Length: 110
Image (cartoon, rainbow, N blue to C red; front, side, top):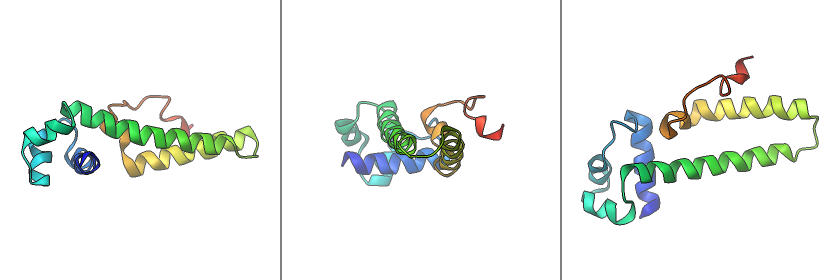
């Protein structure tokens, strides 16, 4: 059930934003009460944190895979930034996880 809550919450976070999504929205989509959601997660922020942890762990795995390639470091860096930028455009995880776009996240545009 935790995975289903995360799935529905992530869809809502992407569609209408984390700040506009309530536990009641998630519960309604799942056809259950808010109290039932709280059996699995203590808060909306806990749901968000679990989603971010999963996605960021996947990103870390991707980074390790790229780092292990037998290509020159400059190619790893160039390929990595392009891959991460494409993933961000697809997933929009920065907005969900509250990562503010900064110079570091825009390095691919240099």
